Every structure is written in structure tokens, then in C-alpha cells.
Image 1: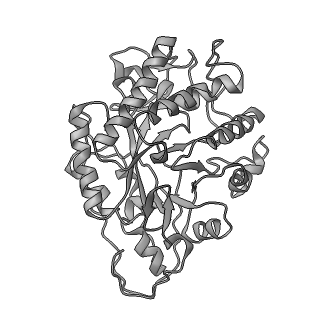
Image 2 (image 1 turned 180 degrees about the vertical axis):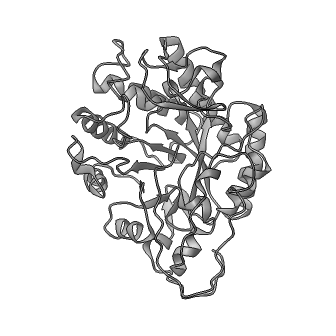
Length: 391
């Protein structure tokens, strides 16, 4: 933690150490995965800029990397790095070395966008998905945001190949020096598309019932566990959707998430990252999950380490841990402009607001040039909250 002048409040729950399986964390503050679009090279490999960016934020108890592509077929966002080639693995090794040299812990998030990708990424070919259903969203291409299209339905061979791609990416993450991996199984991406009956209209073993729609997630988890110690594997999933396009919650959404949660208890995972509501749920089937309702509902159902995310402030994070509704708390947008976030929390220092116009630009400006806090006045409570992270 940075040595800043001011009155330290080191007794905050967020600042206490935590043992996540066999991984010792210096505090309970997690840097949430954040897409930043800085891999502006044909290899889709991280660069020295990424190494500096993550090392600057190594005071977090745990860093979860931006989503990384598990294969070429997984791509669905411009200038995002992958973990499916030797070049990418070698480049990520420089990032993990930098984080470890700074005393940090970093997991790689494994990502496949499925139907939320766009033909622009595949020379005009529609992206793969559980079923040929346009999700009705938008895809961030190199030429700007474009409406999604009707994808091609994955064959059983496609599914087996993709499960293998997840496993291979997990093995690559281990080779690159990551301390563990996290499966991106939330939002509107591929695993979430299998979970959602509106985007999964399959009639085989991967569609229909809740048990079948969740089969892909658990097949991926089992395959990843063959290459990475399951105690070093986390999962990001839950019922929080943006309530747009084909991702509109119903009573089935909650039932599916409850089933997934119970099944996750069968695995000695590193963590489960549960996102709070990302939209106003008033009048909707999941209205009871608004605000902290998400964590009140699911904390009794999950026996492992739970990470809370979305809309977090220092005070809310401390309260969630004190109430035993979460073990760790993930901060997304606040980490963009506050690389020294734990130190600022310790001091009650103000948080810098990030320049949103620079979130997905290609260079160091708005990426690695946010300075640490320099006290010039009395410390004050933080007022910046996060929005949902992209990954």
C-alpha cells in the first residue's frame, strides 16, 4: 500500500487479509475485469503498456484480468488480447511477472462472446452461438458499434471444440504465470447464451431443461479443471442482465441461477463473482434482487468465497463484508482512474473520475497516466461508484 500522509483507517473490513483457497490475498479489494482495448496489434497480444497498467494496480488483493479470448472464434470486441497463441502467452508472462514483482495476485478471465460478436471479426461469416437467434444487442467492432446479426448454431462438434478451447486457454494462462483463471459465464456472452432459454433453443442435451442449458457451463468447468487446480478457478455468473434484447429476465432466470449456484457448491472453487443488478428491476420478475437483495438472496445458497460486484463504494463494500453477505468486493470503473484504490480507501481520500471517452482508446492516455493520490486537504469519503464492467 502506498505511504500517503493522512489518517489511516486500516481496520476497515475491505483492508483485512483473506485466504482464498490456497491463495493469500493482502486485502479483500478485487480489481474487476475491465475491457480496455489496448491490444492494438495483429497478434492480439498484450504489450508493455498492459504490464505497466496491471502492475500499477497490484495493491489490490486480487486482480482479475480483462476478458481474454480463448480462441479465434471467441473474438467479439476490437483490440482485446487473447490466450490462444504462444505469442500471446509469452506477452502475458511479462504482465504477470510485473504484477508479481509488485506483490500482486492476478487471475485471467476466459471469454467467448458467441452471438454478441459480429461478422466483421470473421470475414463476413456469422459468429457461433447455441442457436440461430439474434440477441438484439450491439457489437463493438473496429469500425464502431454495429447491431448484432443472426449467428450460426453450433454443432455438437463445435461445442466439443469450444470446450477444448476453454481448457487450452486455461492451460495457457497457467503457462503465462497467472495465479488462476475465471470463467466469464455472465452477461450476454456465450455461456450466458446457453443458460438463457431465449437464446438457447436447442433440442439436444445442451438445450431445453435447466439441467441441459447449464450442461455447457459445467462441461467447460470440468475440462478447465483438468488443466488448472480447481481451487485456482473462479466463475462469474448470476441472474444480473442488462435487460436488453433477448436478455430480459424472467422467473426462469432466477431458477436457473439458483440451480447453477447449488451445482457450483460441488466444486472447491477459488471464488464465485456475483454481480448485483445492472438495470432497474422495479416491476420485473427479479425486483427482489435490486440493490443488496442479490447478495441477501444468494449468500445463503453458496458455501464458498463470494465476490460482490456492481455499484460498489468503500462504505457499501465494508458493509457487505461486515454483514457476511460477501467475502471480497470487486471494483470496476473506480480502478480505471485510481490505481492506488486500497490506499485511497485507507485514507478516506476522494476518488478520481475516469475520462470515459478514453476507456477504449489505443494508447497510454487515460490508461496508465492516472496518478496516485497526493493529499492536499483533509481526507473525505469516496463518492464515485462503479458501473458494470464490460467483462
